[in-house]
Length: 420
Image 1 (cartoon, helix red, strand yellow):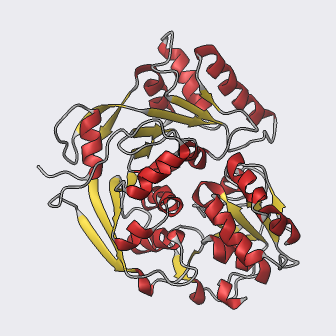
Image 2 (cartoon, helix red, strand yellow):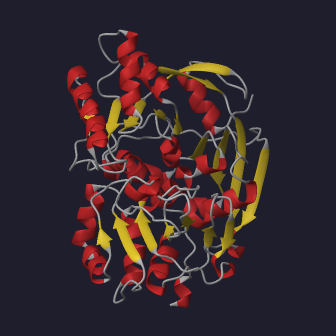
Image 3 (cartoon, one colour):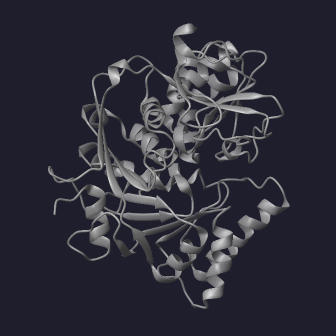
C-alpha cells in the first residue's frame, strides 16, 4: 500500500513494512523531550516505575524554558527537580540557565533533529521538528515517563491531510501567514489527530526557519504532526548545525492516500491577523480596522529565530515604539541573541525603546516578562491567543507575523508595515 512520509517513519519505528490510519502501534523513539512544566510530573511518575536507569542517557533532553529564569519559588523548585534528575541518571542533555533556549528553537539549532527521526516531547509544540522531515509530536507527562524508562511509546496511526501552496508570496507575507491562513480555513479542529503534510513550490522555496514556523503551529489546527519533505535545504541546514547523522530521507508515494488535499494560491493572501480568542479567527491585516494595542511581543518558539529578528530590525530601524506601547523582543536562544548582537540588531531594538530579554517562553503562556493586565491588548508573534493566555482573562492577544507586530508597535495600533 502507498504510504506518506509520516506513515513511512512510523512504520520504520514499529518495525513494519506499512501502517494504516487507525492502527495501534508501539514505536521506538529517537528523542524524548521535557521542559520545566512537563518534566517534573514525568519525573515523579518515572520514579514510581522503579527502574534503575533511563533507556538512553543521550536521547533524553531536558530544557527549562517556560518560567526561566525562575520567576518564583515554585518555578525554581521545578527546575531544581529537573537538574537533580539529570544528575542522578547521568542525562547528558540538560540545558542549564545561560545555555538554554526556547526548546523548539534550541533542538534544531544544536543539531539534535534530523530527517526520519521519531521525536516525542511533553509539549504540544513538539510538532515543530516536522520542518526537518522528522515525525514529531506532543505527548503527556505520563507517556514521557514511560518513554524515559523504555524508549518506546504507542500511537494510533493518524489520517493524512495534504496542503499544497502555489503562487508567489506578496510583500511582507511570511510563513506565519501561511499557517494562520491554513488554520483560519480549516479551524482549530480541522486536522484533529491527523498528519498535516505541507507541499508545493512555495513550500519548497521557504527557508528552514519558515518551515519551522509552519510546523510549530500544526497543533493549533489540531494536528498530530506537521511535516515537510526533507530536501537539499534540509540537508544543508543539518550540515551547518552539525547534525551527527541523517536517519532517513522519506518521500510520500505519488499514489499515497490523503483524507483531503487542499490546494491554495498564496498570491491572494496578505499578512494575516488572528483575533481573540482562537488562532482560527483570522483576518487579512487590511480588514482589522484600527485596533489599538498596549503591547507587542516578538519572539517564542514560533518566531524568535534570527530570520525573524532581522525582519523586526528592518521595520524598527530609525523608529521608536509608540508612546503607549510596550515592545518586548525575545531571541529564542543564546546563539540567536549573540548573532543579533553581532549584526547590530540589539542596538536597533534598544534604540527603538524595546525591552530585550534573555531566551524564555515568558509572556507566550502568561508566564512572566510581559503579563497583560485587565483590558489590555497585545499583538504577538506567538502561537496561541486563548482567553487569559498572556495574563488577565479580560485581556486580549492578537497573533501576527513579525513584520506586522513590529509595525504595530510603532503605530500604536494593528497595521501593516505598508501603513508606516
